[in-house]
Amino acid sequence: MSRKNKPFLEGIEIESVAAEGNALAHVEGKVLFVQHVIPKDVVDVQVSKIRKGYMEGYMVNLVKPSPHRIKPFCEHYGTCGGCKWQPLPYSMQLEYKQQQVADQLIRIGHLSIPEIAPIIASKKTEQYRNKLEYTFSEKRWIEHGEDLDSLTDIGRLGLGFHVSGYFDKVLDIKKCYLQKEPSNEIRNFVRKYSIEKGFSFYNLREQHGLLRTMIVRTSSTDVMLIMVFGHEDLENRVKLLDSIIDNFHEITSLYYVINTKGNDTINDLDCVLYYGSECIIEQMEELKFKIGPKSFYQTNSEQAYRLYSVVRDFALNANSYVPLESGISSQKSKKKPVIYDLYTGTGTIALFLSKYAEKVIGIEYVPEAIEDAKINAKVNGIDNSEFFAGDMKDVLNADFISKHGHPDLVVLDPPRAGIHPDVAEVLMNAAPSRIIYVSCNPASQARDLAIFSSMYQIVAVQPVDMFPHTHHVENVVSLMLNLINQ
Image 1 (cartoon, rainbow, N blue to C red):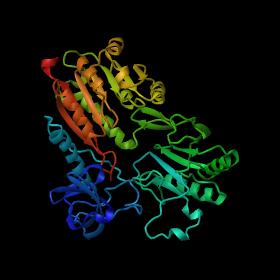
Image 2: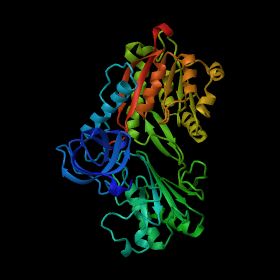
Image 3: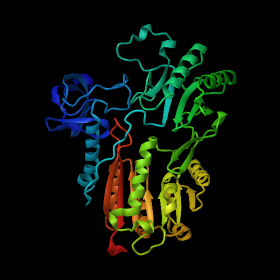
């Protein structure tokens, strides 16, 4: 069915928010998903997709704005794929995220849970990210009202974010509110300088051009810039890197990467230090974490601390079963526990809990992340940690547990897809006294918790908002082994 044959719906009142940042209404028995609207908006909608049981569409006219609607703070709202909830007051964002967790665990997961604690809000709703990646494009996204025919080749150049749904379309960003300065200043300078010098921007379809991507990483005190080039051009590369150093004394670490591959990932490429320190430093209480160009670190640093504090609180005193002075011991023992941190990343949670443990063991798929974890353990003088790289379902087995010690407490922080069934089976057989499950996807978390429900009781649930103005929510669940299974 062509678009012109799809219905145009007038005067639709939006009822609620839905998955992936959409909102929803009901039309003639079908669910209608619409982007860039909020509950109580009355809108005219052009349907773009029809499926069994639901439709998708986009707003054509805002007939009557919701009484809750506020003006988006970013000029790129509606075209840029990020921060889709800007028109929704932050207090309402938190309400819907809290409801999302409840719906996934209770209505979809059919789990028996205690009262969910109020979501922990992010103190910063702007400039909360410590990492942003920008893409260069020879043919940027043409915005509404622009005349394509009147644009010169230089006018088509852009540096910014991919437009949602288009791999080869990049929105030229003037100001992004997600990262503190000098992030915008660096990006705008690099764009202006590169255009003046005639450096070629990347053609994403044909895959050629000098300037490909740039990554800005910040900590509380440091700034790292990673410039990614599509091919080596020694003279122009040096010109650009030197000009960046001359104009931005705030940059403490400058890397470059030559990427001739078909994708933008740099994890399998050499990052060459051009200027400054090898890493930037982030501090969490008395711990210091070294962050390199490839390191994984939670992208909202301040909220990551609150998230890890929840994990620690659950570990120390879940449902008041465990006396604080005895560490994270089980009811059977007063000794300090063996803690497994699965999907450990760079070991942040493991190291955060290390002083309460006999030893901590971290497992992670990415070898570079494990090397970072070992470095961070050494930097902080932590000698009761061990870290292993490999696919979780292959590394974690009965032999591994026999060799490295039976876990008293397991912390799970998997990717959005959740844990592999083999991992769940190994944990059920090991039957640790406690499991703390951290998830960025309550849907997959609910599925996995249902597997554990035959042996474990959910004793606490704490949502945490890591990403204001988006639909994403982090959730922490504390599980305790049923007494009958101990």
